[in-house]
Length: 372
Image (cartoon, rainbow, N blue to C red; front, side):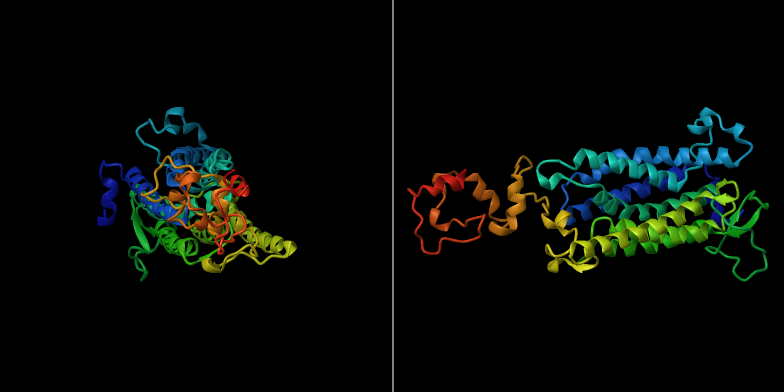
């Protein structure tokens, strides 16, 4: 046994530990990124609590269902084995099944939060997908090393005398489909592909240039689909429906969806007579870009420690904040009573016109309208 396979010879559940560690790291990184982006501070925890259990269920069901369909020996799947209670654990989790069920979890949060008040705590499905999949690809990168621990997700066997017979190009597998020996380390190929993809998506999401809601998810579909399509073609343990590798079919569908969604945005922008909202410097964004007014960038509410959690500003405040008040003044302003405010310093929030002549007086009948 090679040194690299010793990890799988221990009784410690490396598979679960690696996947769990990847989840924790992604949650931490996503939390700080979402906070910086302007989302309400608990959004990542809402996503994690709902989507992670669903993702595990989906990953298991996907693997079991398609193994039964493509494997004539499906009688070996007992209820205890499906639940991982037969001593083998949950060895057999399909990534795409987890992603599909995680997306369903995003739908649940979407319907829960889409009309949330105040506006700063609302979120739509596309925004959830962009935030989630920016970090899910990193979780996939880490999770693939769980396949290494379980000695699975490998490619064809490699002759012992070829020049590239070394890790990470090949990996030693005990009792592989073609016997013990060196196999192409397809788990590592995908891990490295997703590692590079994470930095690409993070740059697109957290960089100075921004794009419409759903753009990051579209890029994920294209990038992940391309990588998985060719790597899946090398694997020796693919799930099939007839002669078709099911993961390859889903990969091609993802590529088409990602390209199609971006084209749809370009078409809608042209139809509305607006500019495409793709890769634009944040400082230059305005209402002339299609979809900008629906993004969190339009009225961000970054949580700050100096703002008390019970503070609840109105929707009108978040809509008009950039027209009348600065972030440092709003709390003090709304905490005052009409008698405490110096009328000569009032800025008309609606029209954005200050009283430069100082002609406003406390007996003016329009004062009541302003405070109402």
